[in-house]
Length: 156
Image (tube, rainbow, N blue to C red):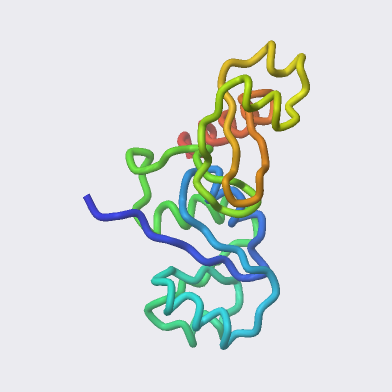
């Protein structure tokens, strides 16, 4: 099985970057950056550049993909189809949605020490911490909404 592609979203695709991370794909989102810099980053880091900018996509040649839609669900469907991404290689919610680092499972005690409110620690059994930015995660209502949307995407 080929390794899943690693993505780089330009500044126009922040929501797509976040959702690719939710789906478990290694996706950088450096924010505003000049074309030369983003092309260099894609090339140097071996990433597929996703962009809505026709000129940038043409300059990226084999490194880039011009995203056709400006609608998030359509963008996700397009990327999954264009790169033949199936669910077998994904690990949903395994990456930090903020910084892209792989999340690390932590115990209840560590979650509580890190600042998760006591009622949440009592209600849940699984917690994760981002080693990059320190963000804490647990399978609450936000988690359930994301997993529901992932399930909807699979039906399309």
